Image (cartoon, rainbow, N blue to C red; front, side):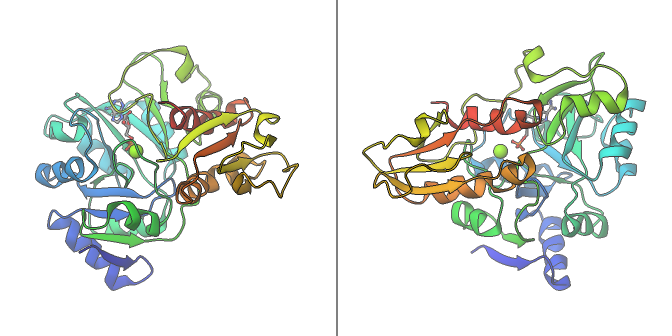
Length: 321
Ligand code: AMP
Ligand code: MG
């Protein structure tokens, strides 16, 4: 049985802390997507994440902290650049990869000697981490390769019975996974595009930050097929997305639908032009489209500007087969 806890109720938050301390799995709200959390200091609890998600053991996890001061416990050294980024962008959707402290169990890092860390901005999760003096390892709370959940109901729909509880903290306000930046080489490298762009990081640091396209580091978990709905997803141009398919299709549009009464379209969702608003709704719209039993999901190609790089990245993987 999976309990549904309400993040606004103090006794429920306290219960989530107790479950995590007891080595149980609890899905928690973050500003990006819902995470499947386990106490990162308990290797047996962390191994439960891999079992529940059917995630390969070499895919590293992100550890979520409550305070910047905790960094020193988890990594061997905190370079100035890490501290500067943490002070400016945390709490927030930026994950830093640093050399792990020797005591950190390799199950957390997929056997690597580096560790990914961030402080999430969701107020209930921060309260849980700070009050419980916890650090939680938490990948997205969905089966391996699937769509990330951005609401407690979506977590329940795909993970019920595989975890002790879901802490309902409302809909995720960012809605897309964090930017991951590797600080273990000479110059920072973005390993996964996210809400904070490489240019934003470079402007802040006043020095170069490499984009995902500029290097080719293979990190297990950074797979081509990922973030995928069950229904086949196709990316379409603005012209293509208006053509009647002749079979049931769910569409996510950026331009106004030209033929609103076409029989072929099981769902037509006009998405916001504003990137943060689009990202906030993307997974919800894909979950909704996925539930219709349509033959395909068509998504109108997003703009190619850098601020849309995370959306382009997720949609590109979702469309991969
Ligand atoms: P998620 O599956 O959304 O929780 O994201 C975790 C992803 O972060 C992994 O799939 C990796 O791509 C990346 N990651 C985590 N830890 C590391 C690390 N130590 N080095 C490089 N990438 C990492
Ligand atoms: Mg994931």
